[in-house]
Image (tube, rainbow, N blue to C red):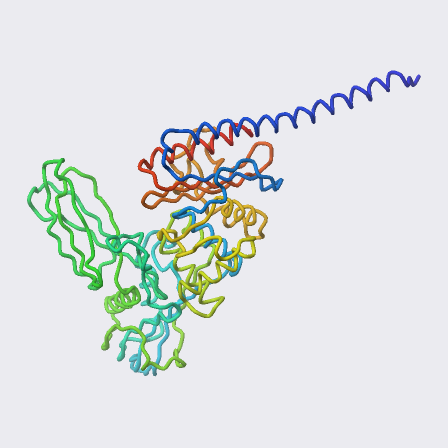
Length: 493
């Protein structure tokens, strides 16, 4: 028989348990927030931060709620965290499927004898991916494919020149605010409308058991475009193992000097090029000749005497996507890629392939997410310039916006993952934190930054930004950054 008293008790018990359940969740959230605040205050009182400019912003992108702020509206130098803004703008205005195109054209008559009575033109589209990166590490894969296509078209002799058409971008190769004494380093590689191998040459110093002899070098690609002056010698004394590699400004003369220990492992380095478009054109000419295609003319840049309207017959086209480009930009923190994206934005949206035009597009994007000109400063696309100044709140606002963006996952997938890859592969690698943090690292002199996302076990997603300037101990700053991220995971697991 139905008993209203027993059912009333059951219903009451159900509601009581339910209320306790939700109260417990609510209290847990309050406790988590309170605990996080206490923990982060401890980090911010760390003696290592004395005289250091530091700002922190942590927000729940799921609940649109701010969890912790410390100088979050102050402006800081952001180093490679600038790449977050550059790549997000590219997704906003161009999308991940935007296609870079590089076309090799024959301009002139192809005679039955196999002679091209004219020029071979490489028309650049600003593609940063003309390298071995997506070809199993084979640097020469693309030039070889182009040479094969030329031969397949029946061309055996090129009577004219190999012309590099880099006009999609300007020829301001490097930023005026980049450190002049570092322009031969790979991270200062020039931006160009026609690029090859990240606009660098790869040099590996190979050990040998012959003290006093010149160090053997393995150079890729093998090309006459460079002159290498090598005075580096082998030494049997490990303490003497020290050498320097540089390129004379405005030239492609590379100087290697110092000593290399006989028992050292091979050491690879990368040196930037001068005039990247001519670099690629030279490598193509040499590749054609190795494949039996004679080139009677020279290698040169396109100029005002060339007919801009007659590009000729397309022989082969090489493509890559913005998705690929963004992945490399953020995972590998490639400054060259970020600058190529910036000029691509300028070329495609403003009709001018310049850094200035790209920055105009990025400023418009900043307006979309709620910030006005004068509240921030943008000087380049990669963050190498100290002229970039953003606040932690700007970066978490950007990250929150992109978390709800139709292409937001492309940005997320491009970020280094804690304990797994990129700049975080050796950081926060304990099982509890591995793969939980997806964030962009950043470092230039006296600037260290970390901004990205943290997943919680409660189904929430946090965006965070930690910006640090004017310090003397980089490892101490990174340890504090990691500690903040780990505290978030601990408090909201």
